[in-house]
Each structure stands twice: as structure tokens, then as C-alpha cells.
Image (cartoon, rainbow, N blue to C red; front, side, top):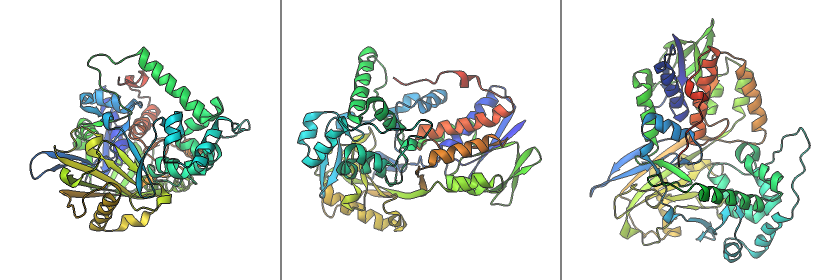
Length: 498
């Protein structure tokens, strides 16, 4: 019997554990022990169910609240777990996004894809950009594509790319809050090849982002026309979640993997080679002998644990910085919120110098997130812009968020929240800085040569929930393939939702 110790109980670690359980159920001689330093499983999938004093409940996602519908990993695993029918899309009848400009909310113009305009009239009439900025963005149609020398990696920072194609005002007003704020990153440091490689490919293929996004939109429309939804098919939106919140996924994976093999509130402090196997030391002083280790904690924690295994890998992992952030969730009575509530989110660019970088109107974005007559808001603070704010006490963060809601949204001054929750994510957002892919290739090459060790999580090839789930499964696949164990499902095409 081969034993795998999995370090980390987020979506990557639990995805690995569920993969091992499926292999065991299929007849493979494998087992696992998962250790998670926090008392709670789920990592950044953290959902509280909060009761309203007048009846009903709130679904409160303090970490990730969605995943990209087009990525198949979650759908595939949800079908295996029997919870696919619990997936839900956003309320697209409320699908509007605002950008803060001069302390006011300006609606993002229709036709914007990422940060490129694809419709003339909305772009011409928007107050988001000055006329010089609009004309500068139109030059994307004639600016030549970047010349890439054969054999070299096509990469540049997000900031450099957007300024080169669209101009600085486009960066400051839209690209920075969209791609920087959402990732908790500084666009000046973000590697475009590691975060949005499709934009580099689009430039090389079409010579223009505007032409590229127009072609992409035509393809999507053609596919919808050729494959219209069938009666009974799920409503398909760009983002998806689960009716009981995203932690529902990790809870069900933990149940299916087997909670008897999962330990919470205990941390791995060291891993070391022991003959042909490994020994994992815990902070309780215990040791666990095993045949393989899947490391799925934060990338900085993986760097520490890899130190005695391969110092070069540890050094490379340590070069991936991580920023800290916090989310602040509050519910209010509808009469305290006399503003239009037909929108999903509002983003505040760094040039606005506001404490809250983004706001999600959760009760309008998702179905059944709040009782009737209640408004559920989620504010974001921190990230690369201002990590110090995350250290403030909960009551201060709540006060800051309420002040922003009064100024920006029109929340009634003096309104008291029905409840509030603050979720902190210390060093929880890995940053794909310039050189990330080069470092990653070296890490993967070295780890491939170490039997019984695999890495998983958001610090490598994607921070989204499907990416993390995929990475956990791939980590198990790596160590099991070294033992000649394969799962039949690995050879099957992944299921897709309609």
C-alpha cells in the first residue's frame, strides 16, 4: 500500500485527496493523509451561513466567490460528486460594472472586453475616458504588433503592454483595477505571459487587441447560434458558483475523500527523505512515514518545506511574492440602501486613492445570497497597493467600508449593518511577476527529477479555482505515475457544462 501525505487543505489539497480516493476505489493500492494547519478546510473557499434576525439566511463567501464557467475542472468534479445540479450562474439581468472616477461611479461602457473597446457608440459617449484617451485607444488598430525574436519568450509587464497598445489613461482607469486590483497585483510587475497569455497571442495573430476581441466575440456568437441551449440546460453565464457558496465544493470533496484521513489544526514543519520514502514532521512533534508528498500550501510555505529537499527549488519558490488582502461583508436593510441595485461590482483605480479597491453587490450578483429586503455587500482592501490596511482591527475595516459605501453608493449615513464579517488572507495572493514562467520551468524540471514529490496550488500556473483543482489532481497523477498507477478517467475528455 502506497501512502501519500498531502500538505494543505484548500481546493488543491482536497482535489488531490479526492483523486487518491478515486484511485483507491478503482482498485489501486494507495491511501492518503491530509494535514491542514487551520481548523477549517477549504483554504480561500470560505463560506459562512448567517441567520437574519427576521428570518432567512445569508450565504457569505469571504474568499473566492466564483469560477470561470468555461474551465471544465469544477464541472467534471461536481458531476463525480453528484452536486452538478447545485451549480448556479450569476444574475446577468443585473450585469453592470462601475468604475470609480472622481469619487463617482461611472458605468463601464458596453462592448469592453478586458480593457479593449469593441463598440463605437458606447466608447464615444462614455465619461470614463477623456477624448484624447479615446483617440489613443483607437490607435491600437494601426500600431504594429511587437516584433518577437525567434526562440525568445514573448513577455512584458501588464503595464508596459497596455500603455504600448492603449495608452496610460486606459491603464489607470480600467486595466489597473481590472487586472491589478482583482489579482492584488501591481501591473508594473505582473508578467503578461504568466497571467494573460491570450493577449500576447491576440496581438501576434490579429495585430490589434480590438480586432482580436472582435474576432473572439464573433466566434462566441457563432457557437451560440450553432449550439443553442436545449430545454433543461443550465443557464450559462461567464462566472459560476454553487447555491450554498463555494466552500460547498471543498466540503463535499472532503466528505468524498474521507474525513477520517484528514487532520486539521496541525501543520507540517519539515519533510525529509527516508530511504526510498519520506518522513513528514508535524508541529505536534509527530512524524508520518509515507511514500510520497504532495505540497499544496501557499507558495511561501512550500518554499520553507522544500528547503531540506532541494535548496534550489526552495530559492526559486521564495522568489514568488504574495500580497495580503481582506474582504469585508455586511448586510443592510433595503431602506438603508436607496440606490440602484442592478449591478454586480464596482472597482476603484489606484489613481483614486481610496481604501476600498472593489465592491461586490452579492445580493444582486447571485441568486439567494440574502433574504428579501436585504442587501449584501462585499468590500475588498489591501493587495499590492496597500497591505498595511489589512493589519487594522475588524471594527476599523468595517467603519472604512461603511464610509466608502456612504460616499460612493449612497448608503444612508448612520446605517447600521445587520451583521459584518471580516476575512483576512495574509500572503494569500501569489504574484506572477516578470520571470515567473522561467522560474516555473526550472522548478518543474527539478521537481520532475525528485520521485515522490509534487507541488500544487495557486502559486504556479493559475490562481483560479479550476486551476488549483487541476494542479492538485496533476500532482497526484505525477507521483502515482511513478508507481505505474493510472486512473482510467485521466484519459477521458473532461465534461463540459452547457
